[in-house]
Amino acid sequence: MTKSNRKTYQEVLDKSHHNLSQTEKVFSKIIHSSFIGITTKMLEDTVFRPTPLIVALSLSIVSGCILFIFALLFGYTVRSFEGLGFFFLFGFIIGIIYEYLRLLTRSTKK
Image 1 (cartoon, one colour):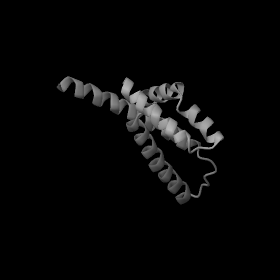
Image 2 (cartoon, rainbow, N blue to C red):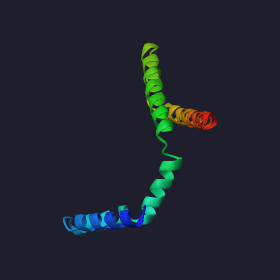
Image 3 (tube, rainbow, N blue to C red):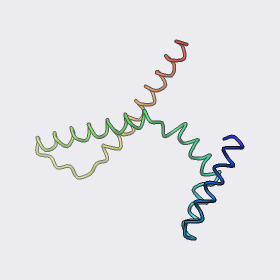
């Protein structure tokens, strides 16, 4: 963030704080602290990538529905959904691999 952007950002925050209660001001100061901003940016760039999350959620929803339908068809009862965590992790890994391969192929074309 440039100096002018940081100054404008701080001015907007200060104006917004006037309309907040005391607890809301404290919460806003915590959320908008530089530590939270840096941590969020780091997680956004590493762990919370959109492609792996979309693939993981899609795979876990589809596989969970298929698992539930087969359980109903064959007379089993589904008591817990631990398998969805496995499918989510598996889909997340597939998404990371897909994004890495896409990054490799895009960089070699340039």
